[in-house]
Length: 338
Image (cartoon, rainbow, N blue to C red; front, side, top):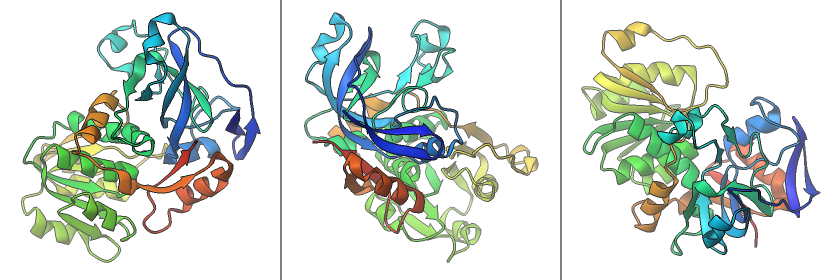
């Protein structure tokens, strides 16, 4: 089969490799769609620990092609999405649903081969059926939508609350779609440029702000005069996190959903202390795939506008280049296998 393989950091190529075989509790997926995530670039650059050589890809959809255990045979031939978390299922963390806290946790696409391929091995226990009215390309985006749903749940976001989303990348736009679906109001999305803000408007943002043209702090004084109930930083950038702490209302919540790339940052602790803010780390997916795909099936979330480019595995260099350079209006490149 064809697979995109990172031999070692910054050494990537399309290779012919053996079709993998599923072991007990795992299934083989005939991959139909796999989205490129910004963290895949970090794996390519060697900035995130990974087991090389490695096929990346943790945002995927496909059809179950083979099973490793007879008990999972009911999945054969079904359209699916699913979690890329490999866990023990027996420890206290797993039993409480916090798979990312499992002592044996490994993530497909980082520690195990992922979905930039014609076939991939995935855990049977993490599968969800993909409804016929949801495309494979949109199904692959259930993972980042699940991140957004988990973040807002962690932030205790509620119907009718105001929301500010800093960053209009794939996570920021998924955050907007999730906030809109759960009934948050007066939702603001900001980004440095207008590149993706038209997409934010399509997804239902009440206000969009390009911060290179408009002072965010000044603009928010009139939009949310008393401060914002829930501020979500999707950038991991120091300046944005600092602003998040100033823009939340007294007693409000700041959710940190952006990857900080290991940087040490300066924050003013009194912004948290004096204003009684709750600052929430939101760097994990909480197994929200089923909820994400249900929102898509019921028409409450439509992320089709986030699929910017459909590419073949042979065009991996183009997809990765677009993901890195992020041309205007670009959100996601998605590998599509016939």
